[in-house]
Length: 452
Image (cartoon, rainbow, N blue to C red; front, side, top):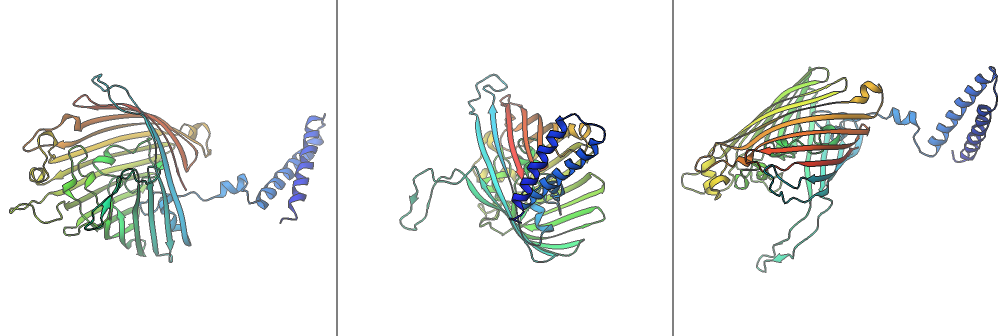
């Protein structure tokens, strides 16, 4: 092909000059057919030259298969299920946050604007055959990991630690084997199959510059753990059921509920495993409705008192997703319960308004509409104004203490997303934050996200 490049380039140049001359010169009706034919030849030669240089033409770009969600995973995380052998994918997102200078009550907020490359993620997968797959997600958070403090070494053990500014995490790494479409077995480090965002957290997939607060606090996205389970799809229905590592209740807090109790597969005690399950129905095109649940004890070590404590966590959610003629809508309600919350609060030294709630809950509704779907049908560009309303309370029902009204929150998000490509998005939105203590701080957000 390298011997044809100069010829192709010369032909394109010659035909382009000739075409320009004909277009600008006075023309009769008989010339139009010849000019159209010359335009066709220029287009063909341009594509040939682009292909010879390894540059995809518009036709080639349009022919690229779109990434799509499979088996409940987000599009890029699903690449392994359509690959032969090795697959590589990923996603990333950068976020700028401009905080209000005052709170709801007009006191100074004390916040500082910030910009953060939240995460760069790489997926590595391998298809052993059509039924047996390995899939993994490796995440680099906050643009890197570096020591910011002097390392203190214990001379007796050689152990030491330093403060880290970022993290490198293994979000999941599992092997699954599908006996058939309706039944498969999966084992390794897996995402907990609960909510709408935990399994589908790639930025172009969800509306909003930031993930819904409900699915950061009540459902601590991203949440994963070691375990084994079964999964399947049949007749528009999908399901998953896992036995997994449990949570560590010693790290629970009133504002963040169970979020800091995740071990995420790192040397997690497996004395009292947890159970997680999910069921979705997608029999109407574009509409998915489902439920998911989690339960497990959150004290994995020796009992701290003779009577013992049994802080069992229950989570249950109902959710729905709609994509129809440019409309995108999602909704979720999740309810949580913590048994033995008072005893756990006593053991980990929480008092007053810091004590754990016996219940926690949250929900949101969001919707957006792609304006270009109606204005430019067939366009790969998207312009989606969106709105989201959230309500959550992380501390409902406190025994031996009082509820902190700041933990009862409402968030309204209004914004727009522009996607120059289905896999790249820029989002701008405004968040109004309110709580019962009148200390909420609003903010503007700008985010860049992509998947591949």
